[in-house]
Image (cartoon, rainbow, N blue to C red; front, side):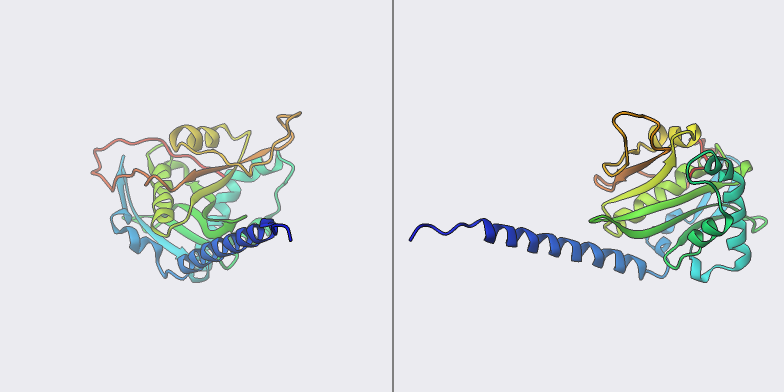
Length: 241
């Protein structure tokens, strides 16, 4: 009798390995979502005192946020982003955006002004799966106008990158409009994000898709520095989708 083919065994082995990898990734995401306060992993990053700003940074699950704070985040997003949405194929609907921002797995990094307690900026992020990868997905990063171009946006993104590293996520991902030049420059030039392999593209028409999916791997370990004195200058911050 001739030699039996090993193709079936190899295929079964590969499938088993892929399933094991997926289960491990899902377990990491679930573990990350169980952390009561992810910012406890990065205690030095609970304050931002630079360029005339005195802010404390808090991490909150949306399920533990006051309605007033959620409404502030929504209104800031609407003020900064509605026109960009309306210029795209997506359009803007208050209900859809509010629902997205209040889904159970949503978490927020929020920067509060220390003297007044007023919220000044936030990122909406989630520990989640993107295809087979465990990721931190940044849904929003929005800043009040008086906080922009003072290094705060970069600081908040560095926190997300370090959280991804600490929780063993493979990368940080986000979606940005192609026609949002400020956002494009911030993420690609300042933060060194690149177009992700799953970002949609049409080889015949550059403008077939109005958005891009960007990402940045967590390894090697992202370089970041803790808070510095008020006299230190830093890079710009932007509003982004």
